Length: 540
Image 1 (cartoon, rainbow, N blue to C red):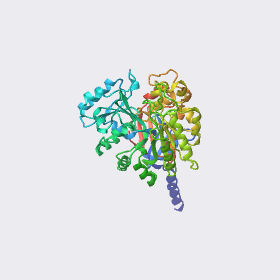
Image 2 (cartoon, rainbow, N blue to C red):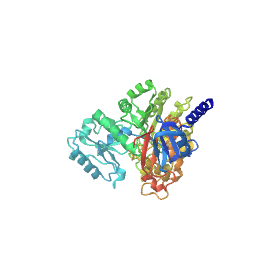
Image 3 (cartoon, helix red, strand yellow):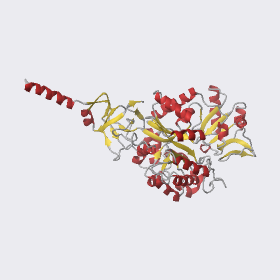
Image 4 (spheres, rainbow, N blue to C red):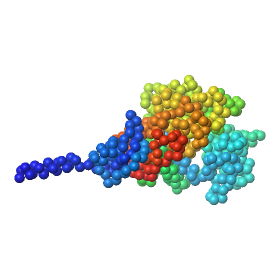
């Protein structure tokens, strides 16, 4: 009897020891790029409570774990949830509510689309975004006369693709109080024959912004949901929004808390007195979905609108150097102020003059402040001797599709010699040890697969130029995937919770239609995110 009892106990203990550990989700039969320190691969993952519990072979995971939901990936490639390290998430959503002028090839096309939009959705103000005179046969700024004829009584504000210039009609100029005598530091009211053309570059745009009614809460919520839908569809699970006000950040937080927004947001606060006063005193704001610990500062304007600040004049505009949007002394004092807090400073710098101003300010302010991970957003044109500043822990946050969008006219702006230090992603990587990759959408298209393709191939979708644009600064596929995952996470102080598929990290991952690391380069833009998971929950 005693022997029988011992046998039963032994059997129960044996079964208990060998029963599978229960988790929420098992994904197996997959081609998983973990993006861990060894850039290792796996076949299976076990997930519980939104976190990865284990990664390994399918046999090992299925033997050790059990789950109500088991996904057979059928050999598909899985990568960590993709991170856009520099975008305008909220603005992408707002753009869904206005005239979409992306891809327009003439001023007449802009006029036609604006009129059609107004007929369908009449409003007190007409807004649009996306025009780029560099895509037109006549590559000159438009003027407002035709807008005045079509919209004599309704203000029209049409934003350039890069967000650094407006074309407005006379009604909008009148509302904003702008005339031929208006001058604003850090920008230009473009004149022709002594009168405003309707084009405003950089800071004068703020005069128009001040008289535009703010969107309603309903419009704001819809914008955020629209932006999330678009981003998740491409496999983006974290977005770095480069410039938000407190009210929008708090709206994002409230929607995340009620599970009405699933995407994770790294929010850079806009550089306004109100935002700085509130957040620098409050300190870091951190939830599993929202992270606020950085300030977005504008150093200069954009190259396409000749607003980028250059050391020497533009090659295609005599005696024109561009302009600093934020004066040099303010950048320096702001850097010192932010360095005294836990916040990160992320500064837009396009031209070589703006870049060296920012880099010097960073170096001086960060003396004695290690591991601050301050970023230069864009780092687009850098003179050769200034690249060394990135060896001091400064992170270049760059957008590969800018190179393939700008390559048609960048040499016109910069000249043959200076363009050699532009879009220098590999050089920046070698100096800094990492690059954080983004798109700057809606300036560029949202697709991270276009980002990947532009970084590796340095070509447009027509495979131009043959052999790639300045291929010395192309990135490898491994470097590119890291830049969109673990390096972007590191730049956000989030490398311990995302960016790779390892135990203890968020179960944010994407199932791709093809293997991004092995398919022919020209097929990369056609990739699709077939399934997307955030915290182990399928969101696509």
